[in-house]
Length: 360
Image 1 (cartoon, rainbow, N blue to C red):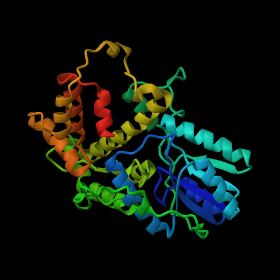
Image 2: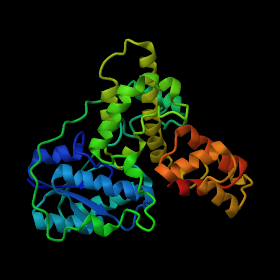
Image 3: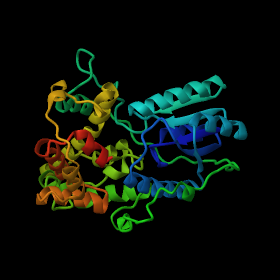
Image 4: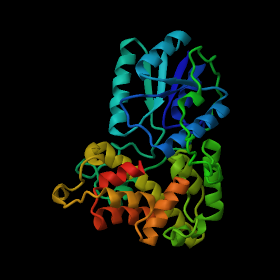
């Protein structure tokens, strides 16, 4: 039986449940669709990363069918061309992504296609962790305590894949113009990053070998390269949290400092889980204040101050260092992020939505 695998935020081969299930059915066609509506447009840095991540995935797979437009129409057309009877994908959890996937699934089912979705992005689904009363958690510590006690399945190995021939209407990645040219502000980024599954695995291995031992003591120092720097690899799913969990927890740690660092690092992975948990249960949090009392906060409108903040020209060295790091490398240390955000909303009193939009 033939299956179409719709890649989205899971650009990897190993521990990819949708891909593995499709490989078990028979031949498959891997597809990536650049949607033009329904989900939020990517920022420039994310577009640069996506370009190189897709390049890496195409090299690893051997081929990837690229398309731009309405997912339902494209997937139905591809199913008719290839004789595919099923569409597989891994679930997404942002409100607009859930809405898009629900609509696509309905349209595919109407023409007789089987649709199967999988958890390829989280240790626990957002609806699996609840308080004693059955409500979602709103505080991290009790959430993570409950989540940490749940067993985590082993990551899946890279499956053996039989690929279908690419359709004639397959697009070209270069036509999407995802990378900057005039100017090419990301020219030096290959010196910092290796997008793709291999790059993610290499980054994890280097962190575990070189930095995990001192992580709990040095993670709060922005002047040291003591964090994992895995965060850019997660949005497009070049590595899964189950893979990280398995790598960190593969054996009991005899050294107390190393054990403490490992647990602290896992709790940071827990914050990513908690963010998805909150976003699923409280989808308005991306545009509305978490606490209604802040509706009365005396925000200021100052384009001059906002521009100075964006460019790292506030005159506050720590704030400016973080923002310039973001501009130069596409990355900002966690402690710098908190200070930069706090400076914007509490010192400049500029709305957090402006900061969120710049970070996006």
